[in-house]
Amino acid sequence: MKTYGRKTIYVNFTEKELLSMSEKQQNQKILEVLPDIIDIHETNKAETQYLWDYLIGIQDIANKVKYTREEINNKTVENWCYAFVDFKKSWQLGKPMQYVMLNDSSNKEISKLNQFVRYEGKKAKDLLIYEDVLVAGRGFRYTNFDDKGDEDEAPFSIINVDNKYCEVIYTSKLGNGQVFSILETPMQTIMINQETGQPFTLYYSNYTVYLKNRAIEIDGKNGYQIVDSKPIILNDHVITEWYVNRGRISLIEIGKDLFDDINYLESLDKDDMEQFVNAIMVFTNAEVDEDEFQAIKDLGAVSIKSTENRKASVELLQARLNAQDTQVYYTRLLVALHQLLGIPMAGDSGAVTSGDTGKAKLTGQGFTSAGIRAESDETMITMCDFQTLKKILKICKQTANSGISTLKASDIDIKLQRDMSDNLLVKTQGLLNLLSADIPREYALPIINLFSDSNAVVKAMQDKFGDQASQQNAGNTDNTNINDKTNNQNNKLNNVFENANQGN
Image (cartoon, rainbow, N blue to C red):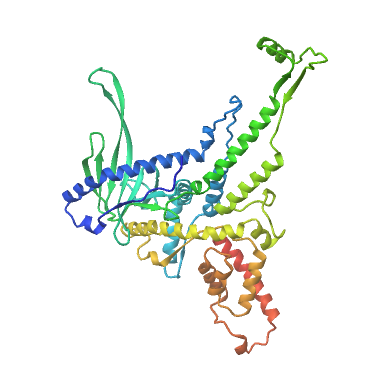
């Protein structure tokens, strides 16, 4: 099965136009576009299920056909697809996304916010929704007030929606803004056949359409009929879509042809070994019927007659693939996959490295290029999470005694914490040099990329050592030797790094 990303659904009206209609007109408009939406959704759903099956090992090699010696037909899955998806999600979101301050005016409220999202298990949910994006090109998140009566520390709920059963609908007009979202609920019921009197299971789906101000329940059992409507107190889109590229194409789809080639190569290699072990006997100038051949197989020996004119012989028909050639081809496929998908490659897996230590090793094994590629995904991830953040803050401000009343989304930066310890010695030495050159701390710390929250580290340094203005060497009347100055900075940084890392 060939897939090329999920189809995005558009309608020819905007959210503003829809909300300006009466409730009756809104219902009619939704029912008018619903059949076309469902058609596209069913295609997306089938492709998404196929990709999830592919991830767990139900792959195209199962359809392999062999035209000679059909009884030897191995179908081996070497599941690099799962390995790559697992690495990507662990590398980029294995450490939690962190909300950090852009200034120190709302530090207490940001701490409260991080406490809430930790209670809601957002770290694990972010990991799972990113897996949805890697596998099927997109994920969906529901964010709303907690249900009444919920004894919960956080006033909001964060729920990842199954990406097989959800769609976000956008306008085809300028800006392509979100208009509404739709959630499918598969249903089944036992019915009685009127002609035979026999029971049978009827499968159908109900749908919930989420506008900005209300949720519309649609029964799909006997056509599409609106059966209920409830207001949305949040007055915002409760379902948002996560994606990292415009075509909603997944990591699996990008590398699928090469995944299939590796499986095919491994299966043929196993076929070759099995055919070598079970080689065919060739009788020359000797006639053997089926019973005699079966006796030969049972006894493991054969006796044949030979004359001077017609010498009889028995040989095994044996031929094998060149193992060196197949290994070279396998390595080519694997290296291409790592490069295509931006996955670092271990040094003993065929990658060409330009050195054994430090930056050369990171560059040669692909960590540097993978990090650059990862930054693009991180930009999109933070954009999607920002939509969730705005809803969370809106809920907190509408909830009494939440501890968050003035915090704005514009006060917050979203940080993804990939491993920042590589080249640690180089980074810390670079920081010492920057500070020795009187570069302000707020500029020096982001340059070295050693802390996820540089602002918090700057504040810790200011609290500990005071906020003294930096002095240029030309205007510095202190004749302290620059080496002594560097040593003093070094002693200070040792304390700061320890405190800051404990905070992170």
